[in-house]
Length: 173
Image 1 (spheres, one colour):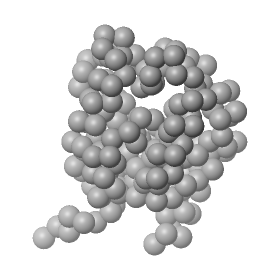
Image 2 (tube, rainbow, N blue to C red):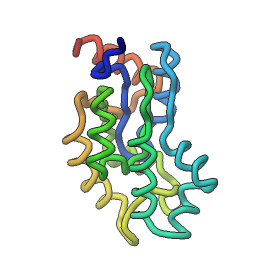
Image 3 (tube, rainbow, N blue to C red):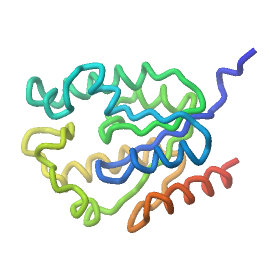
Image 4 (cartoon, one colour):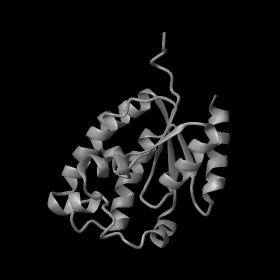
C-alpha cells in the first residue's frame, strides 16, 4: 500500500529570473526524478503564453489558472518549478507542501534586475504599473513564509545551485 504522506517531491519557488526552471531540470536529472514546470503546464492547458493570458484578461485570471494547475499536480518523485506567483495561492502551496519539500531560491534584487530584461512582456502576474522592486518586496515575505529550505541564489551557476540543493536536502533528512 502506498504511503500518501511521503514528501518525495521537490518544489522550487522564487522570483522570475532565479533559475527555477533551469535548476529544476538539472536537479531532476541528478536525482532521477521527473520534472514539471507549472508555467509550461499553464501555457499548454490554455494554448497561450502567460503574457497573452494577461493581455486578454488580467493578472488575477492568470493566478486563478495557476492555482488550478498547481492543485492538479498529484505525482510523486517530481521536481516542480513553480511560477513566481504560486505563493499567492495558499491552497496551491498547501497542496504542494503535502507531498514535497519547498525550496526558496532567494536571489537579491540587483541580480534579478540584471537577469530580467523583459519585465513588461514576460507574463509576470502583477498589478498594473507595479514596479519590479514592489513586486520583489511583496513576494519575498510569501516565499519566506512557505519555504522549508532557503538557499541564496546569488552568483551561482545552475550546477552549483543543484549541488547546494542536494546538500541541503541531505542535511534536512
